[in-house]
Amino acid sequence: MVRDRSAVLEWFIFEELTHIITHSFSYFRLTGNVDYGTYDSSRKVQRWVLATFYRSLSGPDWVDNSGWMEDDDTGDDECTWYGITCDANGIVTSINLEQNDVGGEIPYEIALLDNLGKYLSV
Image (cartoon, rainbow, N blue to C red):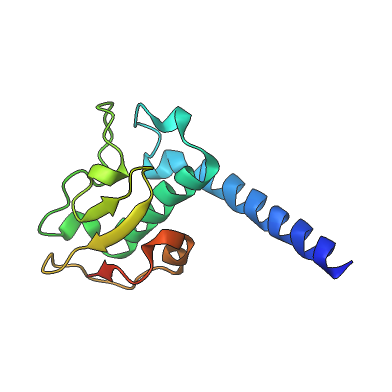
């Protein structure tokens, strides 16, 4: 019985998080990417986490913030943003922003990037 409750709770938390993220996308201007409509929920969460990361660490003031939070319809996705490396499926595997004048606190949401592992360098 506990296992069923755990699964329901996990589903509920994921659904709530997805709802919150969806409504915050317009604020973060994350839907401008022409491929956005094809993203699954986990890819949308990834995009939101990176936007939160950018805002929390003073992204507009970085030495190089190429691609980050650009609101255009070029099709550029988060895998093309400066310092981001993704695997063949578009999943972030590393963030390298060394010597980029990054300031602030790394947001807790970064933990949602499951494949990031230990490859975060700011």
